Length: 290
Image (cartoon, rainbow, N blue to C red; front, side):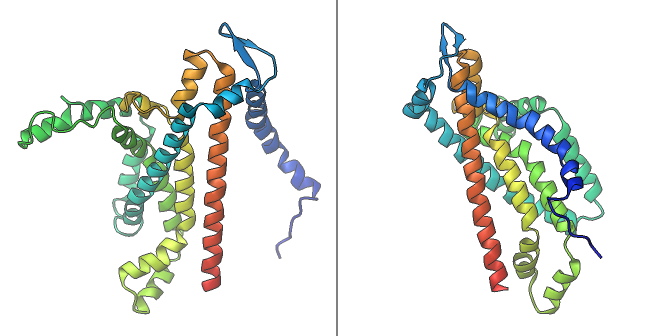
C-alpha cells in the first residue's frame, strides 16, 4: 500500500534542501544581483551606484530595444513550430517504422548534436555562401551563378536555429511515443480507424507531453540564441542576446545589459505561462469530452 507524503514531513523537506541550495545559489542570487544592477548607472564607462530609474526609463522609451525583443519572440515562435513539425515525422519513424535502424540513426543525431556549435554554424556558412556548395550545385543544374543569396539574412538565422535545436524535440517526442501503449493503437485499428485517424486521435494526444516539453525547451533556448544571428545572419537582424552582449561589452553599460536581461526573462516567463495555460485548458477540454 502506497504511503502518501506531505510537505509537512521533515524527511521530505530535508531531501529537497540540496536542490533548494543549488537553485538559490545558481539562479536566485544571480537574478537578484542582476535586478540590483539594473537600478544603477554609468559614468565614463564606469559603474555608478546611484539607485535610480534612468536605465528602465531608457529601456521603455527606446523603440529600438522593443523591436529587437519582438523580433526575438517571433523568431523563437517560428523556430519552435518548425522544430516540432520536423521532429514529429522523424520521431514517429524512429519508434514505429525504423526500429532496426533506430539505434544507428539516434547515434548519428547524438553525434551531430554533440559536435561543437561553432563548427556546425560555420559549416552552414560555407554551404550557404554565394560561392559555396549550395550555389555550386544549383549552378551545375543550370540555375545560374549565385542562384541563392540566403546567407546573412533572417532565413539563414532560422536555418541555423532549427538545425541546432531540432534534436531536443526529436528526442523528447520519440521518448514520449516510445512509452505509449501499443495496444491502444491496435484497438483503434480494430475499431476501423485508418492510420491517419489513429495517429491524429490516439498517438498524437498521448504523445502531447513530449511534444509540449520539446516545444517549450526549444522556445526557451531560442530566446537566448547568439551564434546563429551573429554568424549566419551577419548581424543584420540582431536578436536579444546580441543586444545584451553589445550592452555589456561594446557599450560597457552593465545596468542596461542587466535590465535587458530581465526583460528577456520576463517575456519568456509570460510566454511560457500563457502557453501552459492554453495547454492545461486544452487538456481539461479533452478530458471533459472523453
